[in-house]
Length: 180
Picture 1: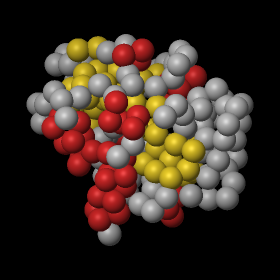
Picture 2 (picture 1 turned 120 degrees about the vertical axis):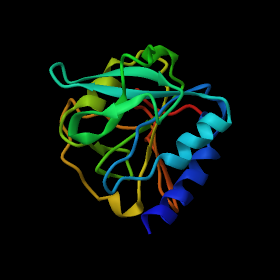
Picture 3 (picture 1 turned 45 degrees about the vertical axis):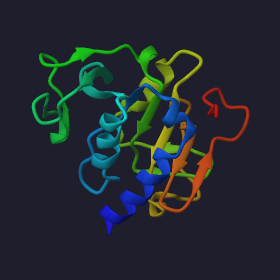
């Protein structure tokens, strides 16, 4: 079920203008019950786009970005066992180079509010982005959408949420409003 829903979400992601125009795409290697990113990442390589993956820095609660060309050879087990770039085998990438960010999360609202895994890594990363921001897109199963989430001043929204059947965009007037 998760695989078939992930395929439907991937097909919708690949149709986004912001994805099609992007030359440098930040994604993540899925784990657990998340949207399966494998097919999305495979498409990046097929399209000749640069794949950027985050590396978690626990002490500073930050994400370091690295360009990855070979998922089998350049990744290692990281925090919580999630595969991440091996810093000795990948080249660093500046956030300003990224055109499109696939953002993970546990739950979302139709207003593009996001609940992460509690570390604040992506919230901090999104806050650190300059303007104009890259497209911030979450891929989620429709069952991850909830009416309300507890939001604090440090929680960051995404510009768009894509599910297997729907798409939700950030309401007008927010700083990370999507373009295109």
